[in-house]
Length: 356
Image 1 (cartoon, rainbow, N blue to C red):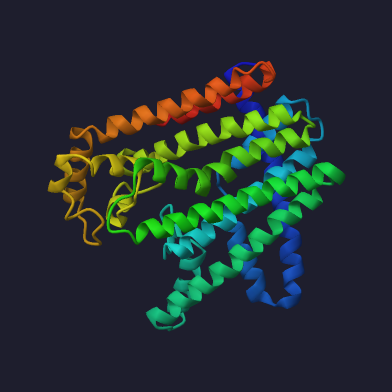
Image 2 (cartoon, rainbow, N blue to C red; image 1 turned 90 degrees about the horizontal axis):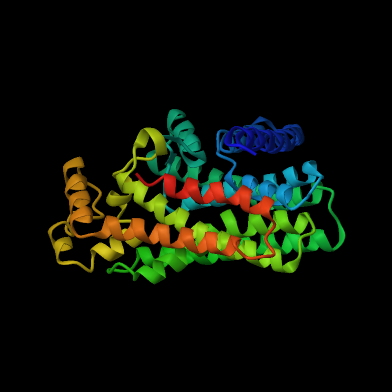
């Protein structure tokens, strides 16, 4: 299949997932109406937070399922939607943990409810509390219902049990990674590169790559060997993806990423690139401004110059290529069907293609 055919197939899969999520939210809002308009409004806000996403996790589920001979695309769409709703729950709660009221330039759930409270005359403190409270509730609803979507897929017996276990693994690992990330923020020093990679794998790669790929394989009835190898591939490509994501957080184009390139530097985010830079003598010249609330664009430019000059940027790009190649090596295993290699190779190209 050529690139245009793969794109059309990807768009078709996304539309199937979108349809599942639209039905889910329609039913939820109808049910919420019995509890009053405020509850309907919360569900509408939660739904808005799922619209416009790349559907990356459903893409993992459905490409594995399709390439491994699965034929019940409706069931696969429900499982893919379950992972999308899990993603929504995790980012809603992550914003609460980070005390963020904006995501990708627009108010998130916390920000939406905070702004409503401020418009109604609440104090800043009360409005912040209102926003955070609403986000916790919304995240809880998304988290619980991600499991319910597995049930609504129609699968039963051993396959249902295994899918629930994979979802459980995804959430369990992500919670561990989130806790490690919180602990890192309290440390005066930047953690080691290996420790940061472990955190990023647990927090993001497991639920975004490893488990969705495995879920698609399980649903298709793949062998344990294939399921395990897809987990290995997902781990390596997921780490590479997060490494690139951190690079783009500093050197990307906001028009393409939807994310400011000063936010991570102002936050003092612990990334592989920063961990490497702190081990060099050049870092001392910018260390006093890194992670300060009043970081300016000029300060950020100085930090970027140091990251380039000390080799941290090149090191990080090389590490992304290293993990991508490790992922591709897993696809070379003889038990991986050619159709699955064809599906997943472009993913590796996409990961590295984000580095410019």
